[in-house]
Length: 224
Picture (cartoon, one colour):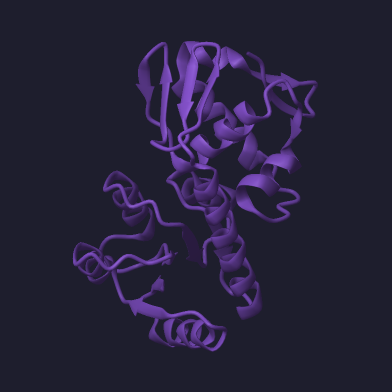
């Protein structure tokens, strides 16, 4: 089931129609209140399409509320805003991808399928693995990261970024590698997104940040 929170009924109905004709079950919501009522009833989606410009509680606030509430299903932000700041803000709040209006229906379907595939791979890898590097420990199953035994609060994207770096200890991963692995498609020209996430990740890791090394401006690696 795919949920779509969008206040413009014409756009919402077009997207829902496209989803249904391409093999997905889909349901639409006009605002965050309707969405959370459905979630509170225990009806969870495989993925949520979330517009930023919603009446009442906007998409960014809803995104933060979802992650604080422990909802971990994938979210794609859908909005007319397309500045780098808006993209980074949405992704940093825990969104899995970002698509700007106007968009093609086939591009949207491709993005949805890519995010769902990535979510399935992450779930299949979550076999209780515990990664350790210096003072930093990362538990894939529980999504807990600690530095010298003290929990560090990371967004989903920060967690995934750290997990990939720790899984590939001492290997240099370029910005393009990381964009493809975490966001699932070619983000040429948006390498700033990786740098911003690395910066916030280092800040949150505190004394454990020393494990993340910048490699001659090419990319990053974790040393342990």
